Length: 200
Image (tube, rainbow, N blue to C red):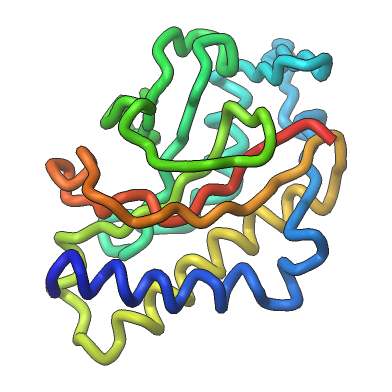
């Protein structure tokens, strides 16, 4: 399947997903980090102007959302998009990252200057969804759209479940215009959907 065909399919699938009734309430959701605290205070969150979260809290949150997913087999991969060096404590370089849960590290895979976007808020942290291109060969062409839709719905729904429990932050969905991306060298498509985490 060529890059152009993927772009066309994504443009058809994403509006269907983020336009569903489940996510259409202003397309926003809330999130809190209180549930993620341990004996050590991992939470370093400043809700005044500059959003800030500790790397341990962020990864713990993502682990809670994505822990049941086998990313060796999925078509969709969530990335972490960090636009500001102050957004995530201990992450000093803005960029697009993938979480390596086994190696317990964030792996930087792209520079944020390569991102094409026009957002209407000052968010500096997002989950960016991309397609794992090397896994497309294991799925029959007639099943690709269904798989992408199911996996994306599951990931967004898991995030939505967590954020609906609490409510100090919100999420805003934004489609990305699909363009060439440095992510292709990692067998990933360009990010096609952002789930921005913003202050209420």
